[in-house]
Length: 362
Image (cartoon, rainbow, N blue to C red):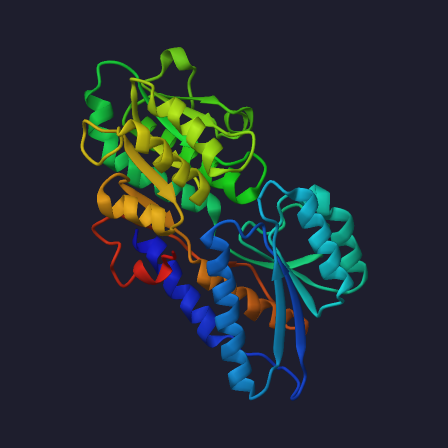
């Protein structure tokens, strides 16, 4: 926990100390293509971009930076994002910020940006496997590490319950998709760390369900018949809260389920929606322990009310601020590097703390 929280301190130092050799009177135009605007997470990233732009413009004494941020209505709309990136490229900006839904679908346009000399800065899940040299740096959470943070906190909460069980128990993992870097890395980080922690205590874990997650976990899982814990990974056909709720409801209805994890805001809210009808989640040993990822009004209320045990928060406002800083630096030809913007696990006990509260969004 101490290591995780320190990342927020590093973020603030990065944002507070970066300096730029901008030519006096020069103006900069940035295009930012996000994965979507359907959740308040992306609005928080936008807020960070606006705040950092206002700060830098005030320091410069004139409107030095202008940016345009777009994103599809749904994180399933890959074709829409491709069109938005094409429009961003046609605007001939000084640099482009990109959180890719599907890098393969964007590769031709990314190569075109590279040929035109327009640098790209990734953010959130970034632009994994992009053409070499096209993406100069990423402003993002280390999503694999964030998944391990969830596993550590959930395992500590339910370890005694697993040890005391006289039959195998089930844990659900709800992921909104099996394609984006941020979601898959969180899901895999959770699975790998949970298997590791359980193995250290002599507990055998099997992973079943979605082929992507089952196939990509680190060695250590056992076959279902030999398991003490079965982690069932479910992915909806489309990225919606309603369909995540359907998948969550299947797991919550299983009599051996003791915990469930939703790996982003949409998936976590799907769990909350499913529980509204079932009423099976809570924080005591006779209830299903639910944990989530991200923030938002619905998740915060579920944590405060005891329906959800806790969740990991990123720093979306911080991501937006660092993104603007990196876009400005790369436009000036300055060296840039990947910046981990951090994460932390929050419960009702620390949700209002100085370390957590500034990183939660509505």
